[in-house]
Length: 279
Length: 271
Image 1 (spheres, each protein chain N blue to C red):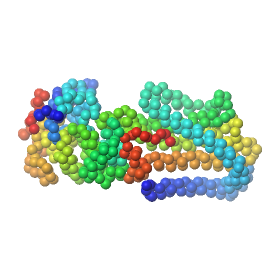
Image 2: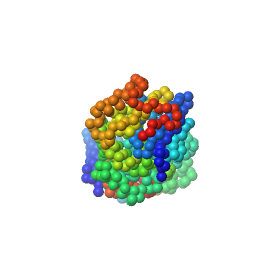
Image 3: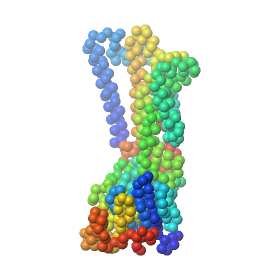
Image 4: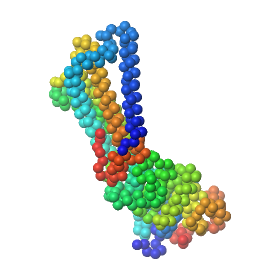
């Protein structure tokens, strides 16, 4: 029983996305066709789309490959990040030891990590997943840690005074408090994940994805191909972001609903037995 | 189960130190079952320290806190507790927030939910059971917070300026509502406030605390007839008590009608 107003709000938000993207593409089209930039320097979006359309079978395969890497890497990174944050919040010693390591992991240039990963794991899917996960887990860890640390002390005192057990207090009070920050991390991760997949493909790949195609198209001066791949990669990035946005909407009905929707009633009233996981 | 004459709460020779600071000095206070006691005092007089010591959140330096004759110092979970902040969980419905005590200890059962729903309906929250707290006004949210405290089933409830953030009209409505709940459910209440009017309107006795070090200055009995209505706020007796208490707080004059707190454990006058 989702209220219509909320659904309309979500649709309006998505419609705004379509409009904004349309404006960007329109400006691009206008700029290139109005100037005398040759098509092999910057093609119009129309010709880039035409290129994608002309080689659709190939493009679909490439997209599927890159999407697979992005998706599994993203899920692995998000889960790792979430679990790590929960662990660190429970065990302060682990937290103090791991925090410098976390920062270090992000200070190492991702391209520099890619090469040794290929040496260790070969040309298959694994090194790409690790690179994507490497990029995604960091914003998730940092945001969830912040969320868990920012739970109101009075709120925790109240839980103690109500006689709350440690586990139930965690599930009912602390964990839901970090859903907002979790989604902030997931959104950042969603927009970066596809870059990780491309870097992974650039380093070494036995199977061709959009990233590898982009490199070879560039080498062949196939500018429309480069831009076509770029459009598809951007599409994956935006699509992931919007998916997370919708998931956030569904996971946090209290931000948008006045009355508890039926599908959330168990969680809004329950005893805290079955709480959902990361994403 | 309480022997006749045993206070619900007995604070005996309680002193609390934070480093070099003496936050509470030799506090003695007995509260009878079913009694409504208000604490007033300037900030820094140790109200919150006393509150936290009685709730068990704060380990006591010296002295004892007896609940039904049993020492409860440093053991949270035996008394109800409510603050100015409603502390409602935004992701739980009104009903889910009222049953929070059960959910946190053993999991809320259908019976818990039914009891909570009956309670909430009886006290004017019936139509909001399935609402998220966000949809409620400040006054309504505090009602939910009090229902949560009551549903947890503790006989002694500590309320720390629960209406402090509400506008004055809402606050008067809430005070009357609280008196109704208290009268009908027969709980014992220790209520901290800045507001002298609020203290006199609600209490059987008003405890006036003084700062540096935090201590009980006087305990003022309020003999106004119950149930009390708005007219009592302007009665001669009310005004006289208020004049006394304001004098204690701001002039430190000797009280005309109050019993001065003696330093012995049996400080509180008989109810």
